[in-house]
Image: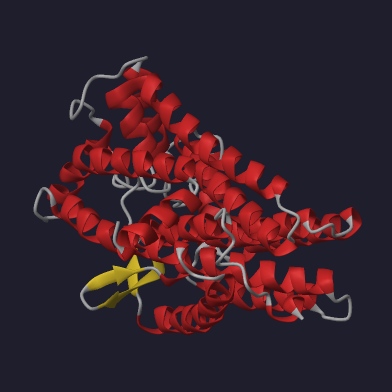
Length: 374
């Protein structure tokens, strides 16, 4: 066996094959549903029928490469990349507000080398690492103000996210951060104070941001403005247990975001409750597996990272599915690996790469944690 084959074998034995296998299955399902859900949307927008499918398949090799590349990085390298990523993403948030594309009243995207990129998506893996590192440093050295710094870094992003507006990403980032604080042992009273501030902020957002108020009002009062929701519910109901069959659904003819925010409705209509259950089960396996890994580690940094990734994926799944079921106002949140969206696909792949790297068995990627290694 040559040198490279030995390295690959060693990597394969160290990686969490169960998690990687579940992710590959979900990615495969995502390709399948992009083929069935996006052509109608593309034609309505005056594009080639398989435009979105082509874009998704073009992004996949990059996403998979990034995911696998990150698995071989050391924790020190991941922390450095995250620090650089924060600076880059923060800068791009400003660029988005100044020069970004406006789509449905939101400025979230910029064109880079001909591709539409949503910088806020990449804050999700970046902030998991940065906040975990800062929290773990304070856990090790009580004089280090890690929680205070993480608070400043999180809330420095919030105004720029709300100006886009991107309420969904804001909720995901803050929820993930609070979960990391909780598992690190922060006082429940302090967490309750954070919760009170967040609830008060949501009430404030209602009066400041018309886009946010419109979503809430539509959810609570207006049947006329909930056209997409009504079509989504009708599609899920008509799908029954096994669905109408691939390509036979009609919800994608009426709902503009059937390929992204409401892909779960397309799945329910064409493949029925059975496939919806399988997808929820796969995500549950992925999340529970991560939580088990987190409970088995005694390293506070690793624990915060793994819990953060698990919570972030869970929040995205719950928001996307709940929107389709009319349980919460629409948020514009993708279903990881399944909804169309190149930035979301790349960001989620980075998260999985970090998860696989942190949980490697041989520990050869765990040499530092800056101050904690001293």
